Each structure stands twice: as structure tokens, then as C-alpha cells.
Image (tube, rainbow over all chains, first blue to last red; front, top):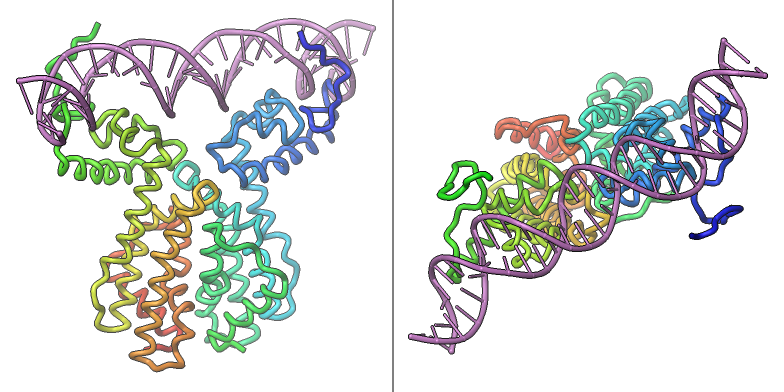
Amino acid sequence: MVIQKEAGHPKSRPARKRGRPTEDERIERRSQILAAALPVFLQNGFGATTIEQLAVAARVTKRTIYSYFGDKAGVFAAMVRILATTVSTDAPDEDTLESLAARIVYRLHSAELTGLHRLVIAESTRFPELAVTLHDNGDARHIARLAEHLRAERGENTVRLAQPLFTLLLGEEHRKRLLGLLGAPTADEAVAHARAALETLQLR
Amino acid sequence: MVIQKEAGHPKSRPARKRGRPTEDERIERRSQILAAALPVFLQNGFGATTIEQLAVAARVTKRTIYSYFGDKAGVFAAMVRILATTVSTDAPDEDTLESLAARIVYRLHSAELTGLHRLVIAESTRFPELAVTLHDNGDARHIARLAEHLRAERGENTVRLAQPLFTLLLGEEHRKRLLGLLGAPTADEAVAHARAALETLQLR
DNA sequence: ATACAATGATACGTGCAAGTGTCATTAATG
DNA sequence: CATTAATGACACTTGCACGTATCATTGTAT
């Protein structure tokens, strides 16, 4: 028999108060579970991640995870949906086409978003609806926004370049990043990448 | 007790002769196991695929799989290596830049290769060396070949367009295909895609 | 010919993760 | 205030896949 009362170890298991939480605590806890799940999924992938790992990372018990999300797939789906919709809404009004392009590069090439993309690609067979969600809230919106700026700044006849431009803003670098062959770019590198893409299409 | 002697069912388990195989049979069997493994991995992904499934698909026993490849990772790695190196060597001398481009599109957008890419992306954390292998034998060679043709057909100053051209030959369509949102293109569609990419870069 | 190697068929031990059950605890709810 | 909901702590059952073992069988190697 191991005595483990008065534990409270630093790196140990869940360490919260017991009992029924307030409504605010419940909402916050839900977010925290999802936030804690991301690095775990990014590290291990969906299949190799266990509920136990998610519970430890979120500092709750398995029981709580099950009550909130049903199962591992539920956690994964909820996490992807939140992140996917977050991508689209955090873009304020851009000033120029170039700064918009640079922002897109910086965001999409980040470790977080390439990792998320990798996860969704990996599980696209099991969760086709997540693939749709990610694409609709990501690529599709970015392309639409680029089209708007092209029309406004470069004229109607450049709108057809929105999709090729978006493709070039990803480029071979993004393929490498999906394969884990390249780290995320700095802000300066992102700007340079965006400019190069615009020059390739003679949009500067 | 279920009697299952004299089985030989059509869709049943392994159905080969027993005993030690000839050297030729061994070589052939190895290939057959890997060939049979591809659709299984494509369907279920690496993690959700079991050795038992691979054994049934290849019509051999688990024991044989273990003796040939050690474990599931061994099968996966051997399969990816063979397919990756196959991609590069089956390209004969191309006539024109346009036909080369169309061929690249047709190959890379095929269900087989997008699926393989998806698998390697998914497992790039666990098998980084496979990601390198796939990229070196795939993208890198394609870009190099495009550069050769650009130099020969369009002049030295177009070589810098090899990588952007390759990127456009994949395009948003390939992203969708990695996400399972789009089926493989027909040969005609591949040609049209290639031409559009060349026109975007004003290479026609 | 004899020994050996590889395989099919089958069973089995092992470990791990999923998911559930129990009880004490705390707070919301009415 | 009494009841109920949600949680932590922890044990537990169950299922599954891994990997190995056994034995008969067949062909190779010497």
C-alpha cells in the first residue's frame, strides 16, 4: 500500500479541486482540455495519442475527458474545429496586397498550422468532414481575400491569379514543412517569400 | 468446433503451398507482400493497420511477415522506399516541356501517389528518413528535370522558374487531394492543368 | 539421403489502452 | 437545506494487437 495523500507533486497527475465546477469553470476547462490536447496530438498523431496522455496534459482525469467529449475522436474533432475557425476570424483589415500575402505566409507556415494540417491530412479518411472544415475556413477564405485585394489594387483582370498566388505563397517550402523537413520561417523570411511570389506573377 | 479442413475458400486466409520456397519465390513473395500492403495502408493509415490485415491481404501468415520485415514499421519503410524510387526511374526521355509537365501532373495527382504522400506526411514524425527519401526521389528530381527542360527550350533565364512551375503543377488541386476532397484527374485534365500552369508563368 | 530452412496453421502469453465502476468531495440547483 | 451534478482518485474488466511458440509440411542445401 502506497500512501499518496497530501500529494500535490509538481509534475504529477491532475491537481485541481474536486466537486462540481461553476459554469465558468466548465467553459474554461473545456478550452483548457483542447488547448492541452494540441501539442499532444501534434507530437504523437491521432492514433498514437492515448486518452490518458490527454488527461495528464490537461491535468484532469480520463473520466472528465469522456464526459466532455465522449471519446478521443470527439476531442480531436472539437480541437480541429476551434482551430480551423480561429484561423479565419483573426485577420483584421489588411492594408496592402503585399502585407496580406506576408501575413498569410507567416500564419500558414507556422509550426502550429502546418502541424494541424498534417494531422487533418493524416486522418482525412477517418474524418472527412474535418478536412472540409479546414479547407473551407482556411484555403478558401484566403484565396477569396486575395481575390478581393487583387481586384481593388491591381484591377479586374488579375483576379484569376488569386489561386495561383495562394499556391505560390505556400510553395515547395510548405510541402517540405508538411514533411517535417523545414522549420517555420521568421517574419522577415515570410515577407521575402511573399514578395518573391508576387514577383513571379509580375504583381509588383 | 468448426471444421475447417479442406478449406480453400475464395476470400479466406493464406492459401499457398507450405514448405521452404525457392529463391525466386522468396524474392517474388517479398514484392507481393509490399504490393498487397499498399492498399491496406492507404485505407487505414499506418497506425490502424494490423499485421494480421497485412498477412491476410498478402495471403501469408503473420510469421512470414515478421521473418521478412521484422515488424510493421519494417513493412512500411520497405514499401515507401520501393515506391519512392520507382517514381523517379520510370520517366523516359521527354520530348517537350509541356508533355513533361503533363506527365508530372498525371503521376503526382494519381490516387496512389497522393495516398503515399499522405501516409508519409502523417508519419513524418515517426519516420523522418522516409520523408527525406520521398522528397529527394520525388519533388527534387522533378524540379531538376523541369529546370533542364527550361534551360534547353526556353533559355537560361527561365531556370529560376522551375520551382514555381512545379508548385503550380501541384496547385490547390493537390492540396485538396491530400485532404481527400478531390479525386484523381483524367489524362486530359492533367494536360489542361499543365498548360494552365505554363500560361500562368507565361511559358507558352 | 540427410539435415536444415522456411512456411502454413494455430494457439497462446503479454501488454496496453479503452471505457466503466465506486466512493469521497464539492458546488450548483431548486 | 436537501438533492443532484460533476469531479478526483483509483481499481477494474475487456478487448485487441503484438509478438512468439509449436508442429506438420515441403523444398533447399550439402
